[in-house]
Length: 224
Image (tube, rainbow, N blue to C red; front, side):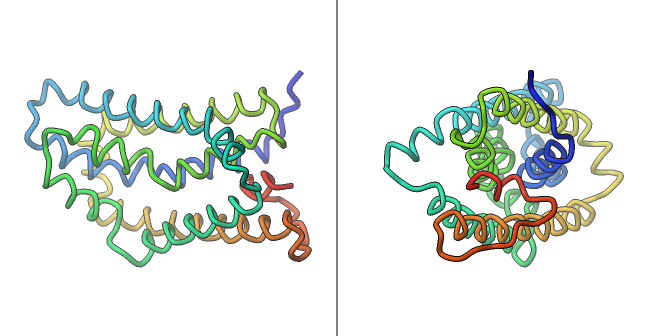
């Protein structure tokens, strides 16, 4: 029987919510559907979330296999991934906000807006792809635990779909400025998670000992 640790479960859920950023996706969706007939908006949102789901589940199923095939140590991958996540977080905090940057991409190609930039990289972001590999590391997570992570991923993606279907209302409530503020706050949280992952990677490789936190991040636990 699966022994559920609710604090760890909550941390994983928050991690996935931060890297997918459902709220920051709303303005991107609104722009992408601006030239799409209203009766197709629901299908547009479903298609985008379905594509993002397939991409992220593919990383969940095969990401670790690719890592092992290349003969890479998890510690090395965790350090590299943590650095990428940290840079991704910096772009969320100091660069153009997620809505602004990806709306600019949507301006270039309305026809494929459900795939790019809405499904990738707005929903299935590089940070989400890396995080899902960390959270389902085979040596530290049983199949049951990986199934729980997959379920959490589906919960966040379902929430993303709900927000897209209610995008008009959400946008009227928070506006572009509100979405930008939320994305930047999430960037700060993600930066903290990324630094913890990097320290966990160094600890796993024996470079130096890192004192374990009272409530470890799901990404740092992957290398233990």
